[in-house]
Image (cartoon, rainbow, N blue to C red; front, side, top):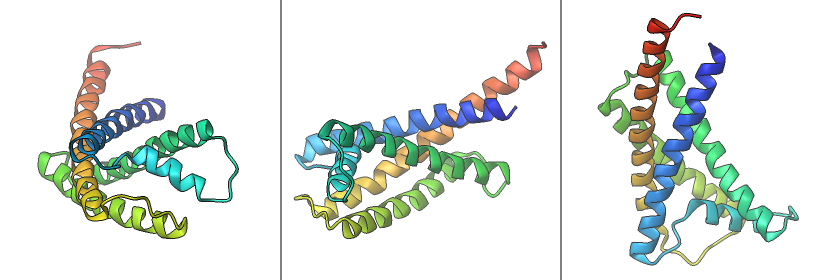
Length: 160
């Protein structure tokens, strides 16, 4: 049972993080700004004392981005399993707003800790980041619900 929950959370995290990242890349393109979280993470890594090749930094930027997405999904899972919030569109919006605030605060800390001041419009970045997290939460909620339904149906109709 735990195995299926982990697989469910991984699939949800991949889907939600990908949707959020796609949105950030589209916003980057539309506003001609650097709003790409994996790229910003790799630049932040460059400012640390960790010696990595450029390719490794880019890879770690993407990995860290998806790991953070998985951690958010784990948090959502706990909220749903403990019945703090139901699995619903309103909950998705609430989780998105909370995640957006957490995301913005986290990036402020990352930029301060690494003394990394990328040449970006910070106000624009934080606004798009807020909405990217709402997209993340809505996608995560939808995928979680769909996969939960599929697993429930499988459990009901498939016997081993």
